Image 1 (cartoon, helix red, strand yellow):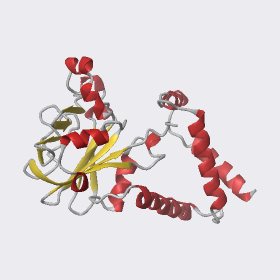
Image 2 (spheres, rainbow, N blue to C red):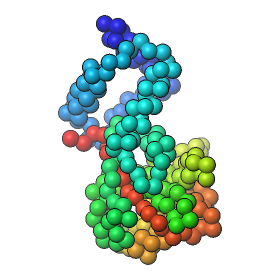
Image 3 (spheres, rainbow, N blue to C red):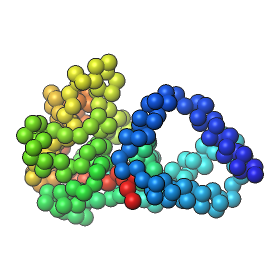
Length: 266
């Protein structure tokens, strides 16, 4: 009963302090693609089981609860998101930067250059089915950067849409870089904070058989060519980002691509 009361109190607290108008909350909830009762039921069962198996009292203090959440966050990262490039702290930062609805499940490795080889044909074969992806790059000089790409890379093959524009994707996309001391800097779509977002560049993703680009306008935030061996990064208007590495050009030491589950697929 004590646990139930504490849970009810937490839910009440969350709703009371929610800084989102009800209309916006409902609109966002109903915009989740392929939302199905079966998936919601599985998530409910999974969380109920976790609560039952947890020996911890629900009456812990706010500080203790935060510590538990952080431990759980790192545990999930350790189990499901083992990057050969990022530290676990940076992995946690990347996950926290994703749209909230996509944080229900951990990203899944699709491609790693050091093990799968520098071949665009293999690259596309392994990542095309993913709805959203995280791309992580480490240069031979040790600089680490990447992107969250909100649309499937298979959209590059949509001849009808690509006849209109080579770019695709949405404003949820972002690019990022890791500072020498380990902190992550995120550059989101410039339209997300603009009074007239429709006037901002919307050049999020573009690709061909042997290249891909993330971000455009004035320059490309990330552009990879030459069978995944090298690339360039420039000042980019879409994300309001500077070059993500010193000098702009880079040789790739390793590159990883993770699928970001939609959270609503059966």
